[in-house]
Length: 285
Length: 205
Image (cartoon, rainbow over all chains, first blue to last red; front, side):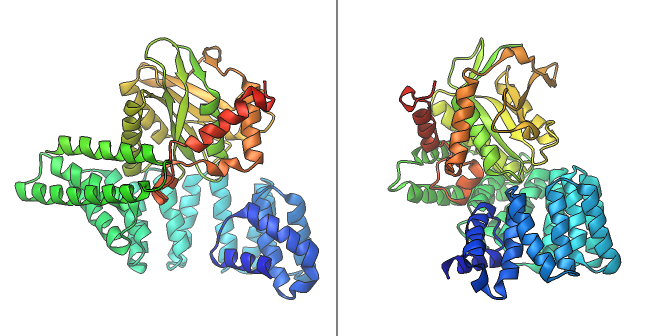
């Protein structure tokens, strides 16, 4: 069953392609529901969440009702009811739902996370941050939560604390180039020579882990250029950074030339990058 | 201050950008191909980011690249737009103000445009946008009467048509470009689509 496999893949990859899930899922359920066996319940859950994302309350209710019938006392299903209330922006009711789950089962992390999501949706970032910090004191290993916290701090321009969260993530995921690159971006944003040097190091590290990460490549180029142009650095540091920047510029040019072959489409971006690199070279020397 | 006109192409692309990433804050630059002085006509826009709007490196990179492209194509950066993820709050964020400040260094009558997510619907009578202009180092609301959108009906229809047909997925912002550099952030494809839909042969006004 191709449709079933598609849904499973999207589940496993945690994709949020809700419109597609709704399309495939709705057809699958209505036309082939009886042939799905036990899979049907997890599919109902997946389709229900996607339906909420697309404002298809009708479809969401259908799935929810089937799940409620089958699993009347399940916390997992109650959380879905809560999510529906969130989608309808009935946040206070949803919060009460989650609090009821937590009274019953204080370790229910899903309910706690939903409560934090509600605070975010209501535009209360300070409270969301506070609750998420409390959550992490208990559940120190929750990667998703650390990442969410780093995003919240970035939005609040609290770069120091965002960096701390990303440091946690890099420690437990040393091969993840995205965390390195995001950490480097935060350091760059904080500014100042020490932070720029750190950012350059981590852009370089991200590239070692994934040499096609364009953000890291550009980041390396920009941080090295700024360090080289700074009046506060000694001759050796200046020379080294000019080398790094030149290497990065070379890599960027190559990548764009490769991308430019065959398509007329990105002619503009290729030319823009070339000129930009040229102009920055001039200011550096 | 001065009058400002928003073209169909600029509005549609902004609108599609916001709709393409409904759960994220998005931002972009407003461009003009007209000469400086007098009324400003925003003829185009470049969608920039849908993640980490407040981090510096990619924003700086994008500003530089768009600047270069503008000088190659006789355009100027005349403003900045942003749509907040939290649709209930359309006020400019600190990073919006910062970028807008930077733009106004080069362009004295630059505008800051916030898309009001809470007001977006297929049947808007007026465009769901709020514009600010710079006066005495502060960004203040622009007088609604100085904002012009010719053929709002047609613009709205085109935007809706493109959303319905899924064409908004064609839109490339700078973030997506960095994920795949073969994608074109000047969006020639989308520009052509908009032209097609706007042509009289298509039955539109």
